[in-house]
Length: 211
Image 1: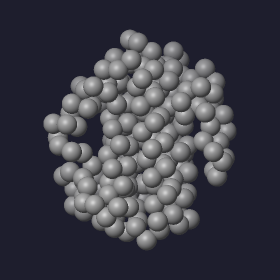
Image 2 (image 1 turned 90 degrees about the vertical axis):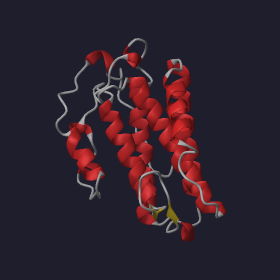
Image 3 (image 1 turned 120 degrees about the vertical axis):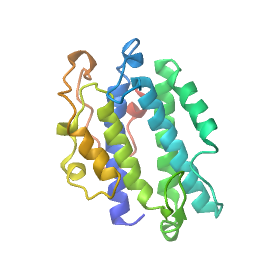
């Protein structure tokens, strides 16, 4: 990774930490309640984030090995995986969310620098450089955290993310969240602020909700 990519990776780590700190306090039946995405429960949003990490990791493994991989095997397999993941008990869903994020992080941190410009293919998108996956992952985590409707909204975005130059359709997706209602549900707010995390240090145990 070059310096810019490492900074993006650090931002992903911190965004993931914030998401997990919030998600791990959501219990039944709040997990099955509607999110701010029409037709999606909070569990489905979290399952989507976990599967998104798996798909991006699969693409990066293909970049590393020289294989031509897509993010998901088939649309049917993705839909089935999403339904299965969303139906899990909260504890297992949190483990999947953390494990998938860590697996993606590991592959990304180990990818040789000369492989980041290799084009990757994702369903419905034109090929793009593997390096763009870092931005896409940060957008995915930050926006879907807002979608939970659990006390985290655009006002909570770090300044670097709020001002980040994004291509379409990511720029429009971020703008859409600016119209979300105030997200102040005290019962879903973490009981304490996440512990500080410093770039370059090992990730804290709270990635698995055991801090």
